[in-house]
Image (cartoon, rainbow, N blue to C red; front, top):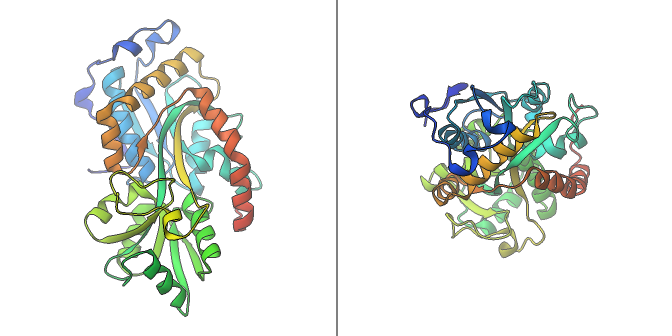
Length: 329
């Protein structure tokens, strides 16, 4: 798949193919009647970008309008999230927002250019996935978690781990992991997995505990070895990789998730029509299979369920950020 900074998804599929359950409405039935801009707050090729493209291909087919992706990476997702927050609330700008935008970044930064509780209108949950501990097959001698742990502790100068930026779940889970296991670990921030992977394959970086979706291809190709995932159960497409509890690390369940959002103030009929479309797409077995093969679980919800989850998880992430010592000002 070729990724570009600005991509028009499948223009040949622009003919209206609206599914019956979302084709009719009252005030929202005219949406969309022109191109919808989709701001991706992360670089091309990363998990958020890849999974958003899968969803938008289907939105375009079902709703009969183009969904144009625009990558706006930087500042842990804040640049893209701020662009969404400041967009016109007309239903023609949306974004896949991950944990940083919804709650983590407010604990990392003294001041944000947006208010995550005020400036976003949730549409639906989009995906959820665990993190995976990976190393370069060429540059690391370990073949399982226990061998990796022994190897990491034996490194006189410590080991380095990469993440898509300070305060991301990859950084925070990596910091928790090295602290709890007594590993001398140094965090190295990158812009995204598209930069982390080459650094690891070149031997310039020792490991990552990053979002699974970005690493499935290199794991399946054998260029990287995966030792453990941070979910509550084994991942369906990688059944031989244990979870943290199975390798002797209890109470270490960390999942990343993403929810689609509009800027606050979008008319409710448009929100409901968009949410219904995402829910239909996510419930399609073929789409669920495509997401699993890409390294994520397709999920969906009402807008209210997103708000409830953010409120429920916010205290946990506030504590994780405090313990990690991460700060960006």
